[in-house]
Image 1: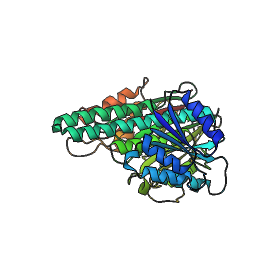
Image 2: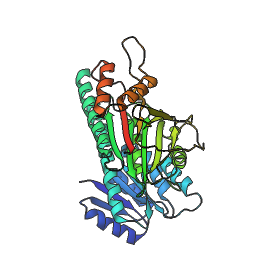
Image 3: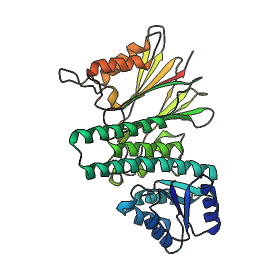
Image 4: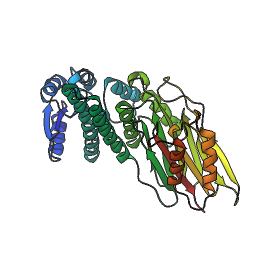
Length: 398
């Protein structure tokens, strides 16, 4: 049974949260102030802590910073309760919270269904991190031979990759049809993508790629996905891609996230106006293919020269907008789709990949497995060197 600790100086909030979470089957303890919360956290080692930001003497930010500095509390998922509103400085406060080690934020007054969902998500991340941490300790203690260690690590990375894959969205059908490829490499990587309707007319689509490989890259990509999916970036218009990228850049500076950065392509498609607005942060350009006639295809490369997320704080990103023609298909991908090493030492490359997409789009029957088969044939070995993510979005079908 997961242990949860609630730290809040409001007895009514404490009681309501405790009753709600106990009804979900969790082992719940409470503390009435920050000092008491720290003592209980060190005794109980909870999987998840819910802590009010504003408390007398020791506030939630100080509690979070203190506990996250404890090596025995590194896998504890920390949720800060914040005051609802758009007050000046709220975005700064959220960034301060992330810098202190907070993993999630929930605004007061608390919506209990949202709370339960955030707790479930936090416990899943805690369990993943805890499992990997425990496996690492077990390997160090047992000092197994190198081959056994390699097999165990690969199994754990595969499990983590499956977890990331489980978070990815299901295909859309209807006025907008989507198909996706997500092929992890032999190492756990940092690719992630999502698409969902912001309202009845506007579809958000994005794909991100965190630098490096391993658990750290995967956890950062999942953290970004959760932040975007929950729309928890403060004072951000999610219909405006440039605003989203600016908020992500301020929240995920690489100096605060293990020197890891990420590229992202983020677009919003309005199906009523048939318009696509996008912004890109160091990501490979998306490709928009429009069938202007039976045999002719218009090709537009949708990219930008903006820096990846996390390099430099307080930079501005630019939107670009395109009208969508009849029978248009959008392709968004990570660099693992085209950086394929060839036997002669060259790399297949993005231009060759775009040429192949154009050729592929002429086919009467299109299935992304055809693209995957072609890439794997070029790869000439069982596994890719990098994660491969590819989205095919049919935005307007005749």
